Image 1 (tube, one colour):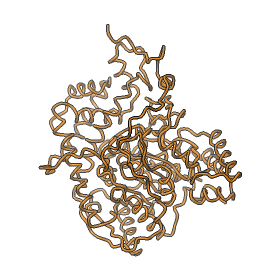
Image 2 (cartoon, chains in turn cyan, green; image 1 turned 30 degrees about the vertical axis):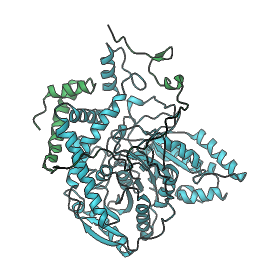
Image 3 (cartoon, chains in turn brown, green; image 1 turned 60 degrees about the vertical axis):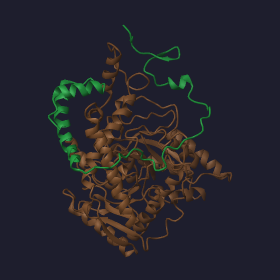
Image 4 (cartoon, chains in turn blue, red; image 1 turned 90 degrees about the horizontal axis):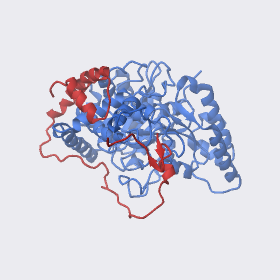
Length: 488
Length: 96
């Protein structure tokens, strides 16, 4: 079997049934990384020796007929803002370049329980702030389909890793777009679960009321398998659900006959929506109709306020969350500071990159005396109206279909000098974070230049399984599993 | 919102504990002004009688029993400290 083109579900089954071994699988992926990641730059670190050793242990247990987890022996890549004990978690920042957390994130523990093998950690925009991964202080990640272009962000490394066939599964985080937009631009599946579906323990915080860990995969079924492993309650995250997670694969194949799919007019009449993206997404909606779904035109008039609302709330939360990086407890410390304030200010000035500083500044401003009511409190009230928009829509429909990104992958450097233009690339994805609802990006074809395009489906809070079912039905109807990028 | 001066930026930088360079102060004055102009769009929205969105967790805070459990050891907690000594984080003299 060709390991690196097999799905995670197929690989898990083949390992369990001894048609291949975890060691062979891990070695195949490591080999592909070794040969090709030099021109992609998806990974910040790989752990070949440890991964092979862990794979051999899984193989030994399977050989003895011992019970293993649902992802036993399957390689996984992890975004570098998620803590794994003893491994650096840099957030692609100079601030944390040397920092290796002394504890595991909840998702890292869950991966281990499921038998998955972490093969490495992936690049991101510094502290997950960005839409192209160009804000990484570590390296540039390139789009596997066109290396002159960005992979999207902030989880650009994880998306590129899956699209390039460096790992069948990856974890990312999504605060405004960061699983769905890079998945869309790289041609893989990216899922942001309902807020509270996956514990944030050990995810280095950016915007705590928006952040959610989510899977990258080549198929919807693989994303559902990874969700089964990582979701559910965790005593260490008080915003995480107290209810046991459902089996996301149980009703995955039930089809969408009779399902009502809302098409919000505002999302298709935005300035700046590329005509090819629009056409492919409309085509995908027609495909779902042919599968028996009922298409319902709806209105989500608050769309135009999503980006400004987000940039107040996300930066306010970031300015507070990133206050912990002070050069005292861990991370970069400036040399020979004059006094304690100097120690803080110089360490932070040296440790953070431009976009992180810009957002800390904006967040501090909107929270500062005299501006709190005008900006932050107003944004929270607009956020409620955005959430209300979705609540009304979900009284009429089961799922909402929309574009993910207004354009296909742009060129390296094209938007990096214009923060506002970069922020607007998240226009269609941000609302799901503000409304705390689940949303997924599924590949729906490519542009005339061969660049991937994603269909976004959004669902009701905690109806993640129904959303995955809709995404699965669409994916199956297209009849093709997205290919991994050829890479020459 | 009004004009963002370099004095405003210096004040925010101080609150943010960022020792910005002169170039950054100039750049951020310009960029923050254009971002704030854009954000100003929210003043169009009717928020009369709308409560602020305060908790993204649908179930509210999920509490747990307050039980004593093992936590990080001192050595583990200090493992990434830039400077440490005698089981403590070390910083420059604070009270002069």
